Length: 149
Image 1 (tube, rainbow, N blue to C red):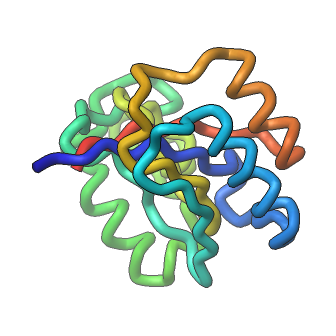
Image 2: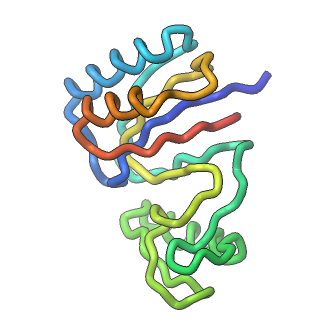
Image 3: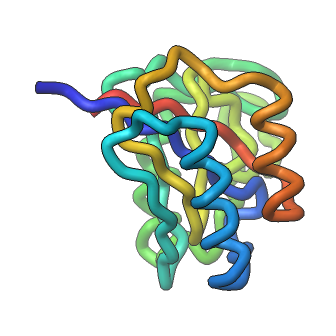
């Protein structure tokens, strides 16, 4: 059986909230997805990549828009060797220095040390208002990722 995970990850991959604010955000997310199997927050010691799982649809250069699939894997491998402490890379397509976090993931993905997660949330999507409330609750810009695993 496959699962769906709704994740909110801060746009700043190195940012983490206080444990108290994370608890408040979990409570808010529980009101948005009351039928979810589980709602939780996760804190990571190192930056990790939050991908969309089976929803993966490719990645494009954030500078020129070219397909980045050909070089993305090698750039990811290089960045992972130092625990994703440095997400910058030179895009071979245009020569621009770009952040792996700021590439255009066709199906949203993000890097981070913190995530809010709702497993099997039981909804098609959240509203702009709900997303805004999540952002206000944590006080930081968030990226929403729908993963199918």
